[in-house]
Image (cartoon, rainbow, N blue to C red; front, side, top):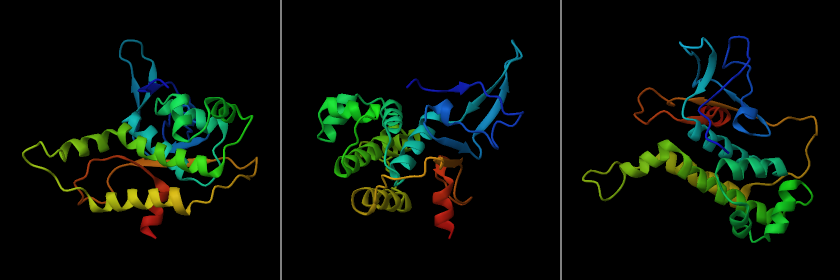
Amino acid sequence: MNQITQHDVDCDGSPVAGHDYGSALGAPFKVYLANGVETVVDPKTGKSYTTITDVPGLIAAVVRSRVLHPRKLSGDDLKFIRSALCIKSKSLAEIMDLSPEHYSRCESGVRTMSTTAEKVGRGYVFLMTYLKDKSVREALKENDPSENETKEINADEEKKALASLQKLFCDIKINPVCDADEELTFSFLRGRRDEESRREDKWRNELDDQKAAA
């Protein structure tokens, strides 16, 4: 998937509220953004377009949310995830111990993969998203032992990542049955959880924030 930096939208002058960015990101499900979006007018052409802050970080957050969701990955989901992370189908098939032919049939919707193979794939993809997330890459750079001064790894972030991995490999119950009329929807926001935190702003799933506040 090409890195998206901007795209044309038609949303009645409101590029945030009520607009689905899923198709613009290449996702086969709906993606709503609470902020991190603005409309810009080209001074030369007068044409309006919408920009999204830190698109690679957003895509990484979207992929993480999808693999943590219990609904079984569809062929379109697999295509989106692989394309978003720029992973070759042969490489992903090898990770899940599948033949390239079998994986290709899963992407096309002809076959379905086993729960075990899907869990392995989800876990691998979850870890890969951190390499695509700008804020995570910068945090790793900040903690490089070669630097004169290292910064402490945020304990909350570490705990959350470990809990997510545990869910993927141990607790998640993949649901192969879903209502055909029930659309999969994710909502994201960008910012700090609290004003006292000095962590860099990044994309987060709104549902995770709601659970944390409960």
